[in-house]
Length: 171
Image 1: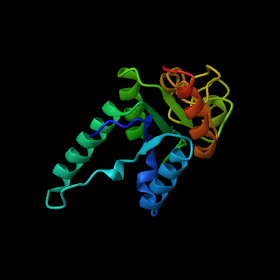
Image 2 (image 1 turned 60 degrees about the horizontal axis):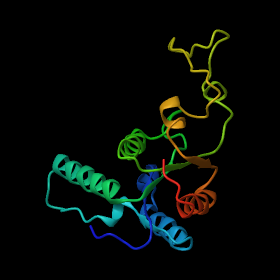
Image 3 (image 1 turned 45 degrees about the vertical axis):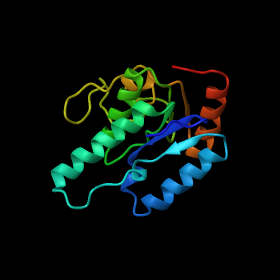
Image 4 (image 1 turned 90 degrees about the horizontal axis):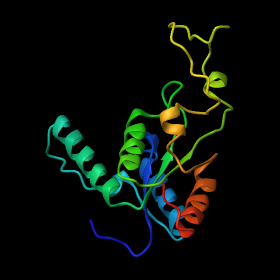
């Protein structure tokens, strides 16, 4: 993977599961380009079509990890996915970026807190008997305490991340 003269931003999120995933990836990359960033989308990688499903999964994982290692920052879609939490693959990518010291900018439809998002009883327990955290954060504390900023949409997040990086912003 070649280094670019502009900041490279890994585009993390469950967007890869959309029916229009390729076109949406192009849209996100164009949005980045319009703000002086180079978007790196998981579908930029070429997967060997003659592998088993498990080998294909391993190849995709390895290539995405290489992209995260080489990017400047990560832009993460942390909207809820298939439930009340963000996509687990995206959460992994955010964690990896944080571990590598790369800034993460998240975007999602804002809620006040996990307690507002997750149904719970008067003692704070969900239907399965697990405590719903009450830190006043819109996502699990491990995500919310690791990003450098948030926005409601990708359209708001890209310019905000570009400003953050232009100001020398790190983690």
